[in-house]
Length: 262
Image (cartoon, rainbow, N blue to C red; front, top):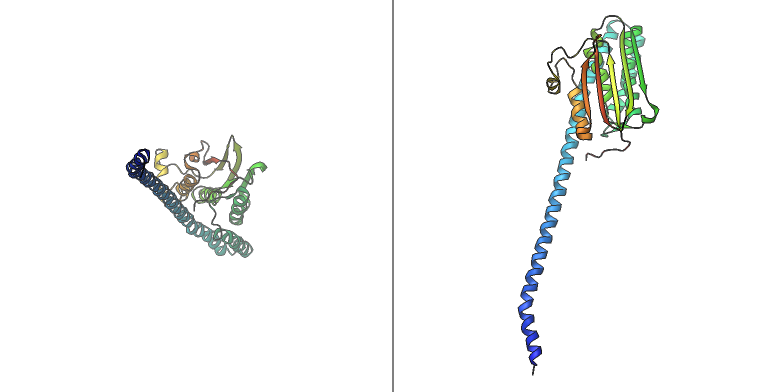
């Protein structure tokens, strides 16, 4: 026969077993919900990254036709003037430039690479402007390997020619300076061409510019790509110069790491 104590334990077991089972099921349910939430959060993050990458690639693609249009205009001008030597060199430089442009898929590259490809674009402009073009480009050695979204400097320089220096009579001056400012990189591009702000009342209008407005196609593109990479820590400003010309300044965090948008 079973003892009284054994019978009591058996009764307690029958009573507690469903309670323990219910508690275990509750913990399992909570654990599964937690896993589902984490999986959904990770999926959302991945989708956001995919969207950012798609948007970034789209922004890069928007720059290419604009660059080609401007550069082909330069080459066409050289051809019409029968400047065969300069024309051949322009085509060589364009080929080198496009080799990079269509191979570059990284969200960030080094300043050294960006400067190299900008100098290739400047060489085309030197062939066109001749001796009346004066260019100053200074970059601190310690930030040459700092990261920058591709085509930021080149697009700003391109806008300086298209919307400023091409309308300038006499000496055309372009001053490019890149330096370290606290924990940021500061890029300034100054030209002595016509001001690109005459059609706008304030900065908010510039930020919503359309591709063919006077202030220059590409600057809003740069803002959006900087924001994708650095959020609100990056800034681009456009300002007229009192003696004539325009100053474009860009500031973003100084980093030597790559950003994975994918």
